[in-house]
Amino acid sequence: MNRDRIVKTIKQYLLFLIGLFIASMGVAFSTKAGLGTSPVASVPYSVSLVSDLFSFGGWLNVLSMIQIAVQVALLRRKCKPVEIVIQTVLAFVYGSVEKESAAAAGADLCAQYKRSMDAPI
Image (cartoon, rainbow, N blue to C red):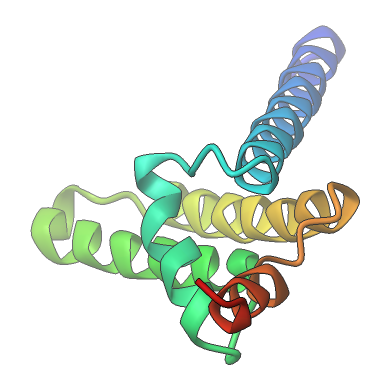
């Protein structure tokens, strides 16, 4: 690879990571505002409300790993190991960024849910 191509690839990955951060902030803020979550984040969000085992970001990682495992099981030999490794790394990056975004937004989702359950109707 020549130098220009390497610089271009690094810029593309940095832009992608910035996009992941913005997307995770959007999920955190919409959740904090009570607007709901995206369809992909709804299952980990719901599980994080009733289970203290992992945070929202942790459950997002678990769901991503399940999805990647199903993909490998269905596609078998069509899966390229490099692509699976990249997906796995990015899934953990997104889950971690989501956790930090929720913290930055002040979204302690489990505490909010538990307070709402204790409140009189």
